[in-house]
Image (cartoon, rainbow, N blue to C red; front, side, top):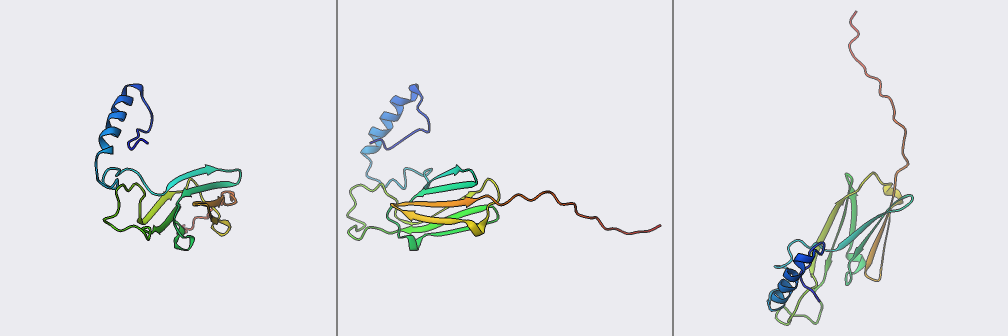
Length: 149
């Protein structure tokens, strides 16, 4: 299993990627220090016919510990992934799964109907339905001012 991945494979860089993978396999550090750019949980935001569907992979998290909020065009998901009961800090020989508090905040592409939002958690995947708001036609605003003649 590769530890280090480029976003896109370029033939000239595959040898470098394999070499970095080989070197990192011998490092006895937690991957928290090696993978600064990776965010947890991994998200997908899909456009559906009437809105959006956001899915987040969060295995091992109790649904009662997940908080989903929306404010100012941003959706925020936060929670805590507990350390496994059988794990002590000195018992890990390899640790690739993140434990502890986490938060993801993403900007939504357009307004959503907050009253019709739904969130479901099953098999380690959080699914949030984000229906679009009903679009309202532009409304003209009357401008008042001083009437000096």
